[in-house]
Length: 219
Image (tube, rainbow, N blue to C red; front, side):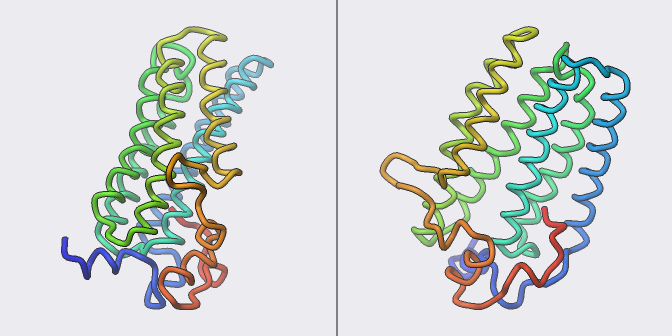
């Protein structure tokens, strides 16, 4: 990939203001995931089942949120971004399919899919981005997803409440790291101007393309 195409990965004023077709398809995967979640709640309407399901829902919602940030910061019609959206879409379908068995025989598959989605995204971004400050942003996200991945995989091979405890620690790391703007050794935190979606597109591209003017149904 050329330097010019790498620079074009950052959202600019020519990026679509409305959600792209791929983004809308991505959202359909989340509709399916929510449908599976509601069905599972009706099947296992116990306090234990509800708490476990809430944790899984937090993981799926977090995947949507991070991908939404992706399409607010990067151009959703560039090939690497489309690849990441497509991969996340299929990964989300896999997550949804394993929800009924996540605290049973397919816990390893749920955890592996979640980890693969977030770690692969970070690796792709680091491989295609050129600007130092943008690479640093991607590296901070990747660092913390690798940290939480340890707990996700430990939980994948645990049982019952031990699995729940490991996964609770993992999702807590994901949420808290985001709230603290991903403080990373040698890199510090994500600059506040990059962290906010609207200002991120402006500060990097030098344009005033406010995400508030486009559909929030992002990847």
